[in-house]
Length: 428
Image (cartoon, rainbow, N blue to C red):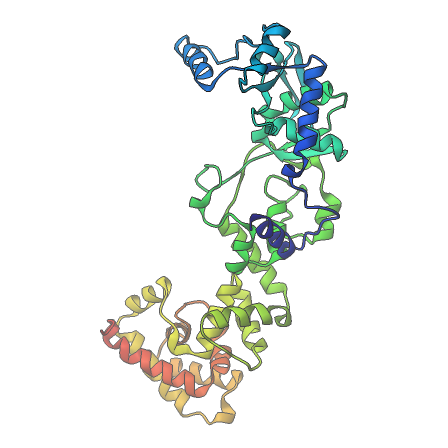
């Protein structure tokens, strides 16, 4: 299931692959053979220490205020003692022998990084059940697959000296390592479920476009230079370098993701948004078979996600579904009784139009006349109509909105909202 989720997410993003996927568990025999080879070459040894013995060693180190390092008691066993324990059936692991020498590498992101081998203990590479520990498994796999570059999160930096030691012990030069910054939530903590969606596919359900998601992810911890943010894929590929990756942690800012998604939505033709909007409308219980493209075009520039586009299309199809948002509520309370009063003035003027007069220019002239006749600002007429039809203080121009909604639905909804907010107060 998890494999399918990962691959589905990559497909949605438009990221393809040349081979695989590969499963580490399929190569257990090779991992074990590499561990046995290191054992035979004297670069590793069997360890018979129990969990209780190791816990006791760790507790003594902590009590003494020093970091725990395995005391190599099993390294000191003679071959005869090792064979005797094996014959007795004592379970054992295989530990790799760490030299005291410095282990350093030129990281493609962080520059030169070094560790002292004497600060690292002899670590287990094979468990008692013959399954490989991560550090051995990835080195064995990377050698077999001829991996040239390892690009991963910088939380793996502490694993790297152990892996470099294993590469060299197995007779191979290490690949290029590039440790990229961690991705944090807006609170500065490691990204997790508490920050919202964690699977790429979840963002499809939230109405994010794959092109926008690729663009957003590319800029998490990497900069092409300058202030460029909205970038076509071929430009990102052309400009990308490991040197452009930043050392500091990146912040997954969902507000910025939605802003970027809105930029892509605005630029896309309605034809390309038609099917995802229809799907979302279907989830909302609206099966609209007519041409939605004019509606999509009317709302996409003010939408951040496909969900928002669908919500706005639904409101224009069924304006009676709309409810004032926070800004809409603020306008209603600010205007008080004038909100419903001005809606009634607008409704009366609009009702007097013939169907063939229900077009943008004529509607604008009509609403301007209402404002002039009653000595009102044009916004004091337009905004109540906008809030009545969409629930929001932001939409396409009101005269265009009225055309999209249509005469009957517009007037019916304006009258209903005027009744609900008569006197500036919501009626139960």
